[in-house]
Image (cartoon, rainbow, N blue to C red):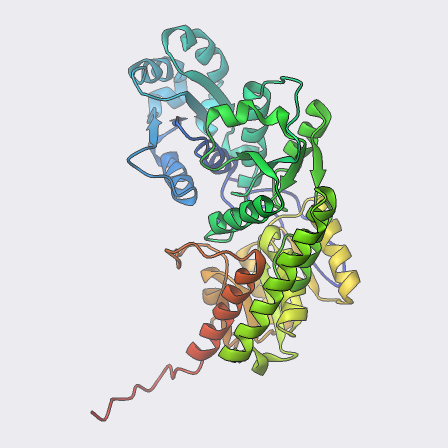
Length: 452
């Protein structure tokens, strides 16, 4: 697992190489597993040592798979197979699984088998006549890049092997892409909000790549008129492929995802214009803004005490880029640091446009790692950090009073799915800030006893 080199600058765009910078990002094998596990009625076979199965378990949890309904298998390669090849044990494992009641079996290869030259494609072709389900090999060794690269690899395989072109289009339809490439711990709630907004506009969702998506839905993707990318970190290649191969038009391109008042309004307006549902979009916006304002007048969020406070944002691009405007306009703080896990050209272009439009000049880090994050926090000295548990530990000793945990790294801090997208999402983020502000008043040295 290679370590990427982060690059940092003040007020400029800096590119860092795409690589796995654990613990922020896992490897390509993990991303491919996360994508494959989003296909309903299928199973996943990891052609890997037993240790790599941990990455499948992590992906299993990220997709919130039901262990009573989802099957994962592993060839559990040992020294002999890693040294001499494991194609025989792979074929035997597939045959042993032939009675599984599934529609497809995704076969994912880890680093060891690909290094020694195991040909999982040839094995799957040879064994296919012996099993009733589809065998879908995905060559996604961890050394191929970060989990975002793995998501793109798996999406490419799924689209090229499973989509059928009937030549017919469903009016006002959309394919949703890569909602799972998202560090929001409850991204499934974001996906639900998107589907509700589309439904209100009369837009039909043909398929979601991928979350609880049946094989039939994937086969029917070519019938979609449009595609909607729900990540700034992965899925762009899938969107471009669908446009080139099937004439599926990308929508809401070049604008941040709908986190915060301005971003939600822009995003809904773009959808309303494309699907001739401007009135519906305007109603959703006016009702949502009215609800947010009424709630804030009643609840008196403590965020008002953080006016003009220097803040840092450390997150994936999917959450981090729209947070820039939310933190600046809705929370009225001043971003001093924006550190993103990824560093692709679309990420840099989008963030650059946002910073220019708002008139900000913070320190920007692309492809950050833990060391670079801590160094950047020490230099910029923010008082509030929007990040993960990692930043809570990295900020120790730096005198940073508030760490607002909004993205998932190392700790699962939510059991109930709560969206960041949309208007309830704004209140959910306000609540995160409110709770951290209140908890920040606790004494770390003295404890008080009740008088009763």
